Image 1 (cartoon, rainbow, N blue to C red):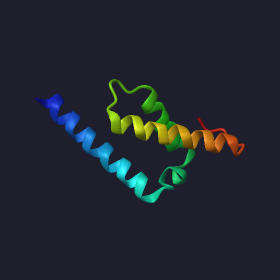
Image 2 (cartoon, rainbow, N blue to C red):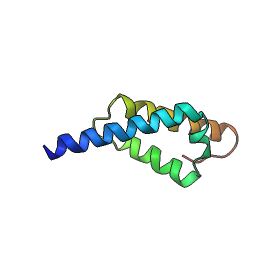
Image 3 (cartoon, rainbow, N blue to C red):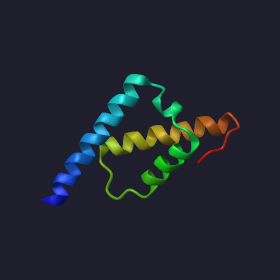
Image 4 (cartoon, helix red, strand yellow):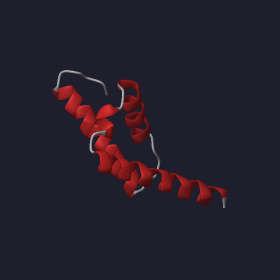
Length: 75
């Protein structure tokens, strides 16, 4: 039961994150380097990510690539 509640909260939080990122369009760009690195690390170590998590991770990796192409390697 506790795991199910945890999964529900995690899914709800991720949904809110994705909606926020899609609404702003540049929220990921505003992350500082440390936070972006941490998000990518969390993505790489996530076990059984749901669809929302996968999309958020794609956005983080895309931002890492954008910064790398701009000469600012972060992740």
